[in-house]
Amino acid sequence: MAPGLILFSFLVYTSLIFLISRLTIRHRLNNETYFLGNRNSPWYVVAYGMVGASLSGVTFMSVPGLVQAESFSYMVLVFGYLAGYGVIAGILLPLYYRLNLTSIYTYLDQRFGFASYKTGAFYFVVSRLIGSSFRMFLVVIVLQRFVFDGWGIPLPVTVSLFMVLILLYTFQGGIRTIVWTDTLQTSFMIAAVIISIVLMSKHLDMGLGALAAEAGNRGFTKMFVLDINDPRFFLKQFFAGMFITIVMTGLDQDMMQKNLSCRNLRDAQKNVITFGALLIPINLLFLFLGAVLWIFASQEGFVLGPGQTSDELFPAIALQYLGVAAGLTFFFGLISAAYSSADGTLTALTTVFCIDFLGLRRRPGTSEQQITTIRYRVHIAFALLMMAIIIAYDAINDEALISTLFTIAGYTYGPLLGLYAVGLYTRWTVRDRLVPVVALLSPLLSYLLSSHSEYLFNGYRFGFEILIVNGLITVLGLFILKKKPVPPVGTG
Image (cartoon, rainbow, N blue to C red):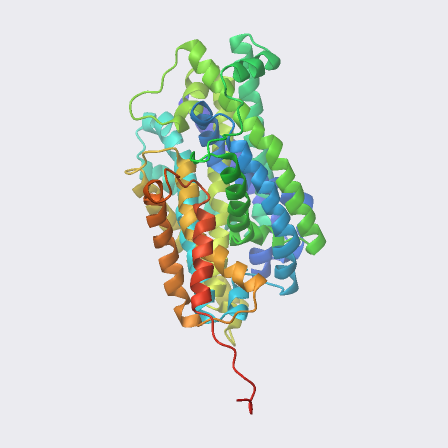
């Protein structure tokens, strides 16, 4: 692909994003617009856009690359997602709407106290900063290697370019803008997958039915792993998927902020169930893409080079083997993934920091203009932090990123899972000031258990279900911190 064509395509796509941004901020622009879109987002638009935000660059490249090693076992995780969305729609969303929350972590303040509240918000900030930076890294590094390196542009400049553009279109509109830009990004990512499959089918002179049969013959379509000691054992995968969804969507400000921008609870619930149902065929499509990519690689004698991971299979084939049409299709999908990995996260991190750490909504006498000025500064600061993490990760990336992301989630979201479980399903009151200690020890103990599980549990290896263990350890810690009921005055 000619550099000029790539640059032109990038400018066209970015112009579309800025046009959408401009259209969404024409009326009623204030801090409520930024934080919750004035609670006026159409649920079906949110549901469709959340598909792209959920997939991001991780699913776009890592999931297809994993097919050779793990077949379609990832789908069991996705089935678990749907069960998790049921929990979110039936339990968490009613709570958030009933309390009229802007930041979902405010609930912890009402339920347990100040220290628990700050602990929950802190774990979100750490989790999202690391996770979203990794997602964006996966996309940017491919653009760097296949495009910008050829122009002599270093990685820090590439990352800075993307972050500046994302800052510009999210700076004012916040969640209102993101709800609509996510729809464009979702469309381009799905289109990129479908077009890539069709082009490879024509190149191989094999129909879709023949490709599906070949994928089955090679064992790619196997979903259920029956070995209980395997990290991909199907029950582990299902329940891990369920709890990953509860924490990475239901207890995640980024994803919930979009739900809270819906007009009412019923619309938000319809959004979540529709979104969860859409993820099943779409993830199956990505896995089928992975099978076709590996079939194509086998037929054409393509082998990943030294230092390349399975994450790079899709870009290598799309940009080097399939011609201009496939290259442009992949490029548009990749840019969509880059934008979707960071825009919502910047808005959510800014919201949590402004509301939960700076307490802007609770400061008496703080004007709208003062809140706006502080919000701008926080927004920029988080963009700079994400840039630093992305550049740093370039030096240490050595495995398929999706495994890294879910491993991190298992440790950082576990305390949140435990806190909300106790808050919703018990009447315990706890020694609030000691909750941060439990939240720190829980991930550490979970890591030690996971590291020594084969020795301790007769060959058993933890997979993504370590998240559940982490949550249970947090619950146990909160039980130890439980206060004894105070007897009524005058009783013995």
